[in-house]
Amino acid sequence: MRWPWQRAERREANGGYTEIVSRLIEAQAAGTTQQASATAAMEAAAGLLSRAFAAAEVEAPDDIAEALAPRCLALIGRDLVRVGESLHVIRMMGARLRLVPCSTWYWEGGANPESWLATCTAYGPSGSTTWRVPASSVIFCEWGSPTARPYHGLGPAQWAAETARLSANAERSLADEAGGPVAQLLAVPQDGGNGGDEDPLAALKGDLGKARGKALLIETVAAGWGEGRSAAPARDWQQSRLGPAPTEHGVELARDAFDRVLAACGASPALFDDSDGTSKREAQRQFFLGCVQPLARILERELSDKFGVPVRLRFDLYNFDLAGRAQAFQKLVAGGVAVNEALATAGLLE
Image: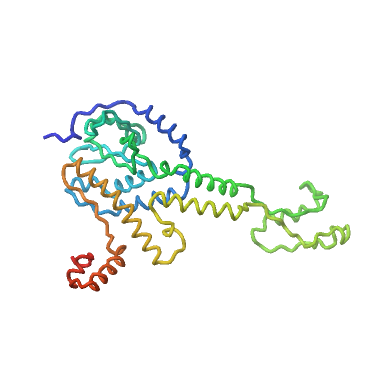
């Protein structure tokens, strides 16, 4: 028997260029290119899902479990958030099963997904390989797909493009502010010198350049540099600082946009702020039960269908849901359910 991924393949020198350009145009139109992807909010969400998938325990035959290594699952999780879709070609490399991640691909076919053909390109350090394979020979998972294009996944930054743009603009504003000149300005006499031998401030300028946090003994300016007290500054050598000074509203806007992007990605801001331990544990529970597990179920079905054997991704969620299980147990017992039955129902008894 020949598995779908063992069929004869057609290699092409390059492919998918039109699809790449089309996706770039779409991303630019949506306002997401080089915007949301460059923000801390997107990386925080992508990192969360990536690490959660990497921690999954794979229940499958040994060769499949080996192919679904933590690095592979982590990449899928990251792609789902950042790109909105992830595609791996199933390959037999020698005697080992491998899932080869592809960065570009395009689909052909009718309304029946089983008839689809994928032209996929994987890149290496100095070259690329393109395969034209049936849909049964790829693992394809998406965050969400529009009804009109079920073959195209959209990520949270595309579904919530305006929020992503808000976050990007707020972050860019702060970055521009922080990227401005930084200096300490010292007022000098009108004859401040030109740095030459006759410069009256030459010694002082040299000392300041070598100060590096050290104390300096300098002449007072109370005499107004010989012009009298009327020409003296209010305080000796009072400097003015030139540097970033973002407004409170700008910082608050960026923080609010950060929270909104996290919400679009299925994560709670409590995971990243100074919330107490109880709030963080509840946020972790919600993230795993409301985001990680549903996406894992979608991926499980895709893996099981393509490999022809059950594939399960198991997460250690016991501690995250312990408080909820305990509350369920208490309510069941209070309602007259036997202790052992209540323990089993609440998931506290194996």
